[in-house]
Image 1 (cartoon, rainbow, N blue to C red):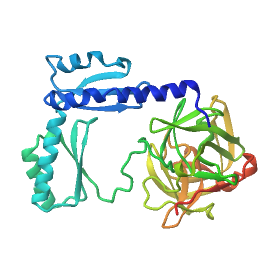
Image 2: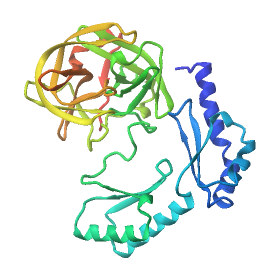
Image 3: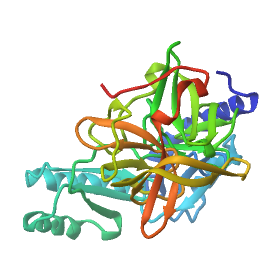
Image 4: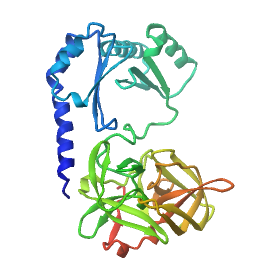
Amino acid sequence: MYLTTEEVNELNYRSEVIQATKPYLEKLETSFKDTFGGIYFDHKKGKGILRIALVDDETNSIKTLLADFPHKDRLELYNVKYSLAELIEAQETVSKILVENNWTDTSSEISIQENKVILYVKSASSSTNGLLENINSVIDGDMLFIKTVNDPVINTASRSDYNRPVFPGLELEFPTGYCTSGVAFKTRSGQYWISSAGHCGTFGQSVYQGGEFLGTVTYKKMGQHTDILLVGPLSEYNVSGKIYGESTGVYMVDPPIVEGQIVCKSGISTGITCGPVRTLLAFGFTHDYDGNRVFLNRLVSFAADSHSGDSGALVYTPGTYKGASGILSGSQYLTENRITYSRLDNMPAEEFGIPIQIIPDF
C-alpha cells in the first residue's frame, strides 16, 4: 500500500518538527527550569502542532531561545501555572509519602497537557482519605488531580492514542470525522484488515489512527443489510482481536443471537454499553459519505446508548468467551435508546471479492 506524495511529505515534516526540538530541550530543562512547563506534540490540532508550555516568561527568555526554531509554522507557546520542575518535585513528594505509608495500591503520572500530577487510587476508605489529606496538605491543590479507580484499568492508552496493533474500539480518523475501529479480518491470501462502518468513508481515502497513517479504504459495502468498510492491507503484527476496555477479546465469530440476549459495543464516544436484543429484523437508514440516504434492513437492534463517533464499533457477546456479532451502524430513539448493527453473517465474503475470517484474541 502506497502513501500519496502529500501524505509522505506530511509525515516526514512532523518527524522533522519533533526532531528539531532536541537541541533546545536540554537548555529548556536546565537553564529555564522556572519557566519551562513541558513540551508535547498535538497531532489533532491543525495539521499537528508542537506545543511548549511557559510559566510567567515575562523576560521572553524562552521566546528568545526559540527565535531560530526552524519550524515556526508548527510551533505554539502557551501559558500554564506550574513549571515542569515543580510538577516533578510534587510527584516525588507524593511518591515519598506513599512509600513511607507503605501504600502501593496506586500510581501517578505527570500530564503536560493538563499541567498536573495525576494520582490514581484504587478505592476510597477512611485510611486512604487520611493519606490523601496528608498529600493535599503539602501539595498545591490545583497541581494534583486524584482519580479513584474502582475497577482495574484494562487499557493504559486512550482510544485516540497511537496503538499498534489496532483492535476493536479505537478512534479512526477519516477525512470528514471520526469513527470506531471494528473487528479485524484476514484474507485467505494472508492480508489483514481492520473494519469500520461503511458510511464513515469512501474508496481510496486515507485513514489515520493516533495521528499516524494506518491504511486506505479498499473495500466497502452499503445497502440492504450491510454497512461496512475495510481499511488496509495491514501486517499481521498490526491487528489484534482484543477489545478496548475488556480484559479478554474476540474468541469466536458470529455467535447465535436471540431476542433478549445481552450484547455490547465498545465505541469512542460512549465507551462500553450493553443491553438486551429487541429484534433481529430492524429496518432503518443511514447516510453514505456523499450524504445520500441509504436504507438498511435485517439489522439487529438492542437497547443501549451510542452517539456520533461510535459508528463502526464491534458488537459482541460479553463473557469470558466473547463472540464477534456485527458492526455498529447507527442509533434509534424510539421509546428507548437503541443501537442497530449489521450482523457478520449478513456480510458474505463474496460481496468483497475476498474470503474473510475474524482475527481472534488468542
